[in-house]
Length: 372
Image 1 (tube, one colour):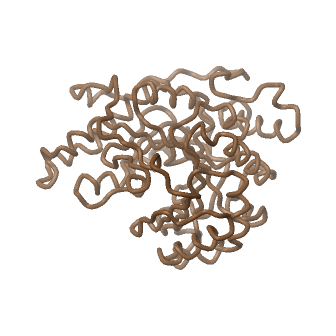
Image 2 (cartoon, rainbow, N blue to C red; image 1 turned 60 degrees about the vertical axis):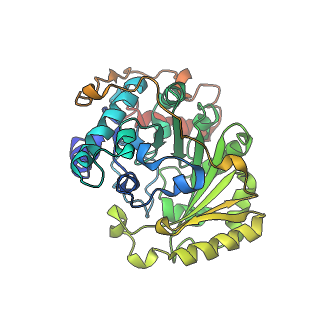
Image 3 (cartoon, one colour; image 1 turned 180 degrees about the horizontal axis):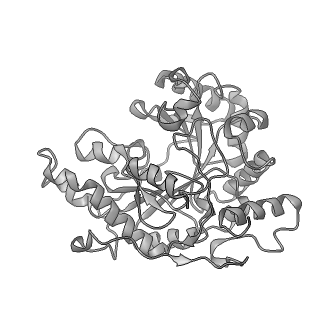
């Protein structure tokens, strides 16, 4: 990947765990250790913030350039493919390294939470880039599950063919940023001209996955831009029929400050009002909220299984504490020519029968360094 971009991310406290994979400790993980609150996912779903790794396996590539994104997009192809099993070990080591300073903090040293944080059990696969471009994402998710951990995967819905065959994570998110294709184009600045059609295909797949994994639609609300047409969002929700809908406010941070202003950041009260307007149009209800994150949770009805119990959870085969200083692994080189990734759900010749699918395959090849 681009080395200058890598240096920029390292200055922003990204810890690389492979060639195209990285970890960055979430602020809510730090706050949880200091007893200063916890992530909304803990309040909504029961995950333990102090045991959660925020990671990406595609820091080098995204096919959208969303105006609200706090990351700077810098696309470069995969030149090596990181090994999924080693990534998990390296992610845990990187998390321990980044949290090591809490051992000297009077408020956290010796605490049960700090000890537990050395053995994370949750892996939030988002952070940066579009992670579905990582050709061994399925193996990574399967390995997390095999070790007894949970995985939360966020995708932008631009790779429906990959999504349809993916090893299912514990909780699967699709981001929707607009109630219509015109606004979608303005907000996401997608590489593909058929971006909206790809998203619709992914929403259909999400509907088919209901009951097989926990499904979520996430709406990022930008005041003065996409907090419009609640009935349009409701139609997308009715199409995908997710278990959960998260309506979350845009935050004026990072690279987004070059494109938007602080006036685009909605108040929590405005998030709640817009959530209620959407819910009224699709039969969902406002179930929960977290003002600190400016986020609301919508569901058809609350259910006991919304909250997962991780009180006795522990990863098997976590790297030993004494090995916490080990360096990241040597990644496997990618093949120089085009190949089928049956394990990674890459496109096959049969799936590429339409012009749209051929374009999708071309974008995947570009990301993976197989096309220049």
